[in-house]
Image (tube, rainbow, N blue to C red; front, side, top):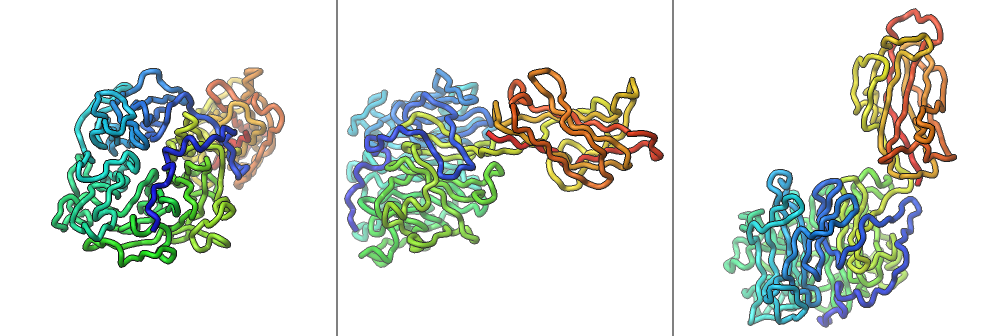
Length: 560
């Protein structure tokens, strides 16, 4: 195995990436927009709510607060970081009970000078600390984990890792690079009982103590007890498949083989620094590894022969993404400014691959580009599904948070009220899906015979300020056959309802779709409000009274 360092390493590759072109996607069904700009070296992000996200800045040591896409002028925290090479303020995640305790975890490289420095020697340690967030400010709560300078070993400054996450098991996971060290965790058979203390995934309780069910707690050297995975060279990406709760992480190779790894069970040895890429392609083998009791080796699920400086990893598990892409895996890189999209197999323990990459290796740029999803993203350091269901990413080199959204998006009512009529059964949820859970109303009193005795007002929020097209769909029926149904959308230019469809309501479920292709923006109000009125009125004498209107599903569909 060629153990030479990848030059430049992933975060150090910023000088190589000069592309300032617009961010574009291969798939025309989605588009990219800037959510927030004006950041400096954005690395990690954590959504505190649908509108507030914390962002770590690598070199400044600042945690920035972004509210509705606007960066607050005052940082929540400013740490004295050593930012030499890949060091700095690197990782962030919130406690599962954040709403109650306000806890936020940070992974950072501490300077010995009391201020920010790029001098490698002025480094104390990499550490994970817990902070309390309150009104835009972070204050220290406790030290959780520390990876200290060791005079007997190398100490970086590269291969720091830094991604931290809370797992589905409510444990804290920390991925560290090897800091250029070479002991048992790096599969050095000459030091099988000496720990480098770095180079893998550490699993801790939320207070920093070691869980009793960690895979290596039975080993004599307690330095091995925190490990969930070892044999990791370096990583900028770790996540859980939301559908299986299994860990996946990216790993940066030296002169060859970047990897995407799947961890089906605790105790995996990823192989560094004896194995990178598939075992079948490496002159070393599993017999050259240091295998702790209970450990196992597993080949990567995908590799790039020529390193792309692979970074973050996430899944499109959101209803905002179409069925053809939903649950796919998306991955970023540093060397090309690309995003990659991989379809998961049925077992979700690997990717659906064919042709030149059926062997799980991209041997050329052409094979690399088979999974290319987008370009122009600079160094993507984090990918997250926001609470609104869109995909967000941080770009270290572009200094922004980008957001990926569908070009066509549907929304359902977020509120309803009866201007006329009486509610019999159902609620807001009754309108959100075609499931026979209907909103049922009967006529109410009116002041004139011309007035409809049932008038339902619906509101929602448009995903676009000025859509190019709009459609409105309603699935409904009435209990008798001589009822007129009228559909009107509120025109915010004229400040009045505009009737777009009038017809006889059916006595069994019937769907009406109204398409607006000209000046659809007239139906978008302040704060992107959508408003509709559904009215019902008898055409003549009704022999069954009171009659009922029954609405099963209402939906606006808007095109950017």
